[in-house]
Image (tube, rainbow, N blue to C red):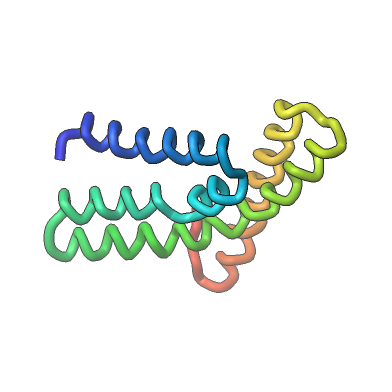
Amino acid sequence: MPVILKYFITAAVVVAISEIAKRSDKLGALIAALPLVTVLAMTWMFFELKGQEQTEKIANHAWYTFWYVIPTMPMFLLMPWMLRRGISYGWTLLAGCVLTAVLFIVTAWVMKRFGVELM
C-alpha cells in the first residue's frame, strides 16, 4: 500500500474524530478512545508483511500497546482537573506529558521485574 494512502487514511480518521468531538463531547471521546490508530497500524502491517514476520510483528504491536496505554490513562484525569481550575492548556498538556513519561518509566521498571521488557 502506498505510504501516501496510509497517511491520508490515518489523517482522515484523526480529523474525523476532532470534527465529531466539536459537535459531541461524549461521542468524540468514545471514538477517540477506540484503538483506531492501533488497528490501522496493525492492518497496514497485515497487508505489507508476510508469514511469521506478519504474525510476530502484529502480536508484538498489540502486546506492547496494551502495556504502553496503562501509564497514559492518569493524564486523562489530570488534564480536566487542571483545566477546570483555570490552568492554561499549554501547562496542562505539559503536566500531562510529564506525568505520562514518569508513569511510563515506573511501569517499565515494575514490569521488568515480571519479565516484561518495555524499554
